[in-house]
Length: 103
Image (cartoon, rainbow, N blue to C red; front, side, top):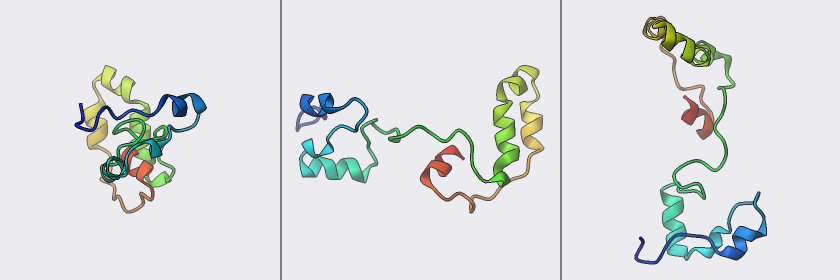
């Protein structure tokens, strides 16, 4: 437990709307500053929104295709061979934090 008490939002902000974010202003400024510094969201260390399902740039398509077929590749015992056959890709086409997390 934090020396400042548990890091929870107020009951009023939780009841305001189940679809809106909790009111982060209910935290003292020094706590909110630390949460922001370490990218702690209302989901803890997970991002606020859902992850990307696929990278939008076609450049990454060979790797996305391998990941799409991951269960079958693992079951067939071909994943290592398929992964070794893929090109090493550069990261300079990743534009958003969401894309970096997906990659």
